[in-house]
Length: 153
Image (cartoon, rainbow, N blue to C red; front, side):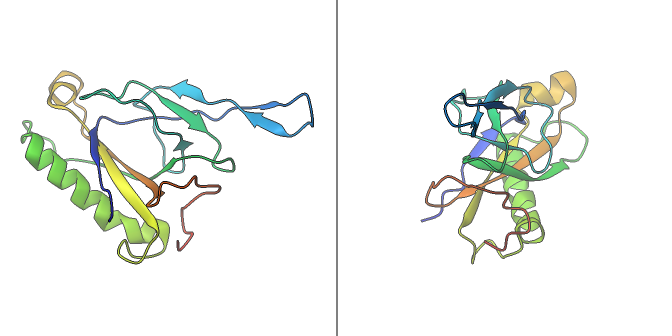
């Protein structure tokens, strides 16, 4: 069964690697990042998300094992907050519509699933937040080891 969870607010990642003293292989240290600076292609691990807000995520390079990757960004239409249910539905539909072009395979055929992160009523009204972040993850919750963009997975 596919899991398409819907969470709120945008998330961000930062890429950091440092040398491991034992074998000189790169060791990756997740970095907490600003939730309003997400870009397509950013990868990150799962995080403990609040009920209504994401305040940071542990960003990682996509070449290292990671849980998620941003595959699309888009804005919801301007205007008054349309309600939680409408924002939820519009965000999910928008991510679904962008899935095949980004991943290279239809959602129904892919081993990749997605979640949509979107504005809360508070962020919509307080800071004019309209951005939806479409995030890909392996449907069996396996770690991704490379970018999913154009992967045809």
